[in-house]
Length: 170
Ligand SMILES: [Zn+2]
Ligand SMILES: [Zn+2]
Image (tube, rainbow, N blue to C red; front, side):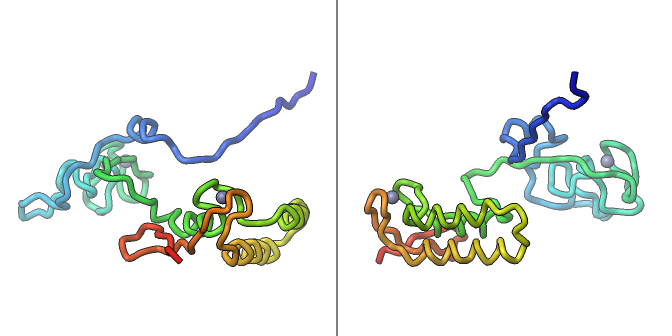
């Protein structure tokens, strides 16, 4: 009998339901402080001390620990409209620049795909080599404006002033 059992790990975003379940409060107030003279954080605002404290003389209202010992607790807010996660925005634009916006395939020829796959499979690729390879793939994809799979026209996705990806028409 083996001492080791096969384990799998999966990384990803939590679902909206999981985030709600893990949270201590739902943040619903847009104001930060209540109207008193003591500068008390408003309940259900983003500074609510049930999510942890940011002040030396006020403990966390969930675990009772102070600023140094409280690890912080989750809160969530329901957004009125879907929006892009600011942390993933650059990566999202990067991916959109490499795939067809109609059929979602990579904008590469079969030969190019095989060639890049060959490089990517090398186990000892250094960080800078990987970065260089990613740039090479991205440059190749971005130069192609017609999809090799479905023949759809693909403009260049850029971030607009409204912080969402837009595709050029020509
Ligand atoms: Zn706490
Ligand atoms: Zn396509």
